[in-house]
Image (tube, rainbow, N blue to C red; front, top):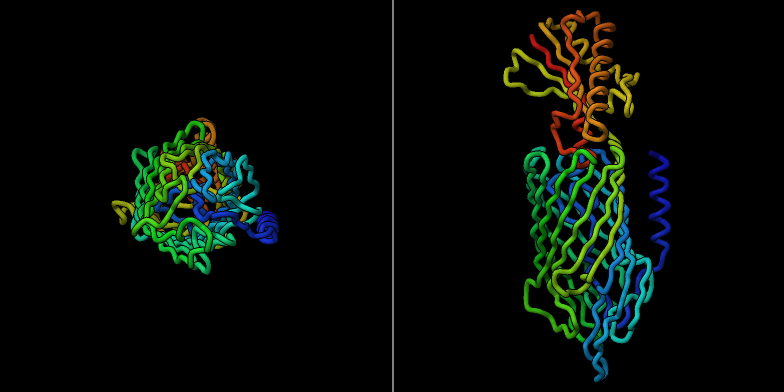
Amino acid sequence: MKDTLRSFAIVITSIFFTSQVYANIVGTDVQNFNPTTNGLDFVTVQSSETLQPGLVNIGFFLNYAANSLAYTQNVGGQVVSRKPGDRILGMDLNLGLGLTENWDVGFSLPAVLSQELKETTGVAKYDSQGLTEIRANTKYRFWGDSSRGVAAVISINNSLIQDNAFIGSGAGPTINYELVADTTIAEKFGIAANIGYRQRNPGKPIAGFPFEPFENQYIYSLAANYHIASIDTKLIGEIFASQPAEKKVNFTNNRSQETLESLIGLKHDYTPSLALHGGLGSQLQKSVASPEWRVYVGLNYVFGPLWTKKETIVAKVETPEPKKTKQFRMKGEILFEFNSAEIKPEAFEYLKIIGEDLQQNSFVHLTIEGHTDSIGNDDYNLKLSQARANSVKEHLATRYKLDSAKITPIGKGESEPISDNGNYQGRRENRRVEFLVDR
């Protein structure tokens, strides 16, 4: 974990020492490909889910966009009719952190890495490479469960582009307010909708440019995904858009202020902690910063939790008949190393809670259920979950002198998920051992 944090710090430091971006002719402000900082469920569209307390997500995305720059239709009386033929390579470096059960925060550093142009006259181009913005966001989920929910998101964009006519001279930060809702259908289909308001703080128009700074906008997006459990991959489709909330500003170039783009991609869970992304995007309407086509690749790496509470490690679960049955639940990584059925020594103190409860309170029968996530072969997961349940039975029966005839270990494999196997923390919830105590 220390090596991961050190590497992340080196990357951030190197980017901060890169020069800020300068814009020529008319500048640019809108960057429409903005991966979420928590890396959950979709690519750029938010779900209601937040990172669990102490979990950290590091995201790194590259996107290569073609013909996204605006160009003026008339410069000095000369009509510019040719496309600039631009190709821009952009980068997003993201960090997400779960604070509480329903609250997370995130930070993003987008940058321009390279730009190619065939036509430069009257083009809203970048004059240098480097950071374009610093973004911060926070999400709070005020209603929901493992399959649906509603959340609010607030994000702040601080532009670092100099001489940017899209925001004007002396502009303040842009603040986005969004309401998020999502649901899961049949444990495979996920659907999300975001709707919000972008509050801009434009500066004064820059002399010599053919339009005024952008005003406030409405923003909205839709997304859907399908989880293909057999190959640990999600197919993702998104549409995101914006439109002026007030009158249109003076805008004499070839592109509209309204944004309408689509995206389709894959998210493959390479390991329980590492997800790989890849896909394509395209404008549905010719608008500022919307490309004719876009290719993106990326990754999200999640680790932690950096902190946890003891009561969340050994959780008591309510049952329909609480007087008859008592149920405990423990996360798999607390008890076992990855792909192992050997109990970790540090887990003994948590199993002690269950062992002493069984010693002090007589029981008729104990069922120990082993569960896994969906990564890996079905048969392997079933055998692994059975081996883990057997290990826990042997430990409890031996150390706490319990009657082994009253204990039944059962391997459930990946057949009974309690959360979404399509993201890190859902899989983390599904890798578990459950204890059903009949009194």
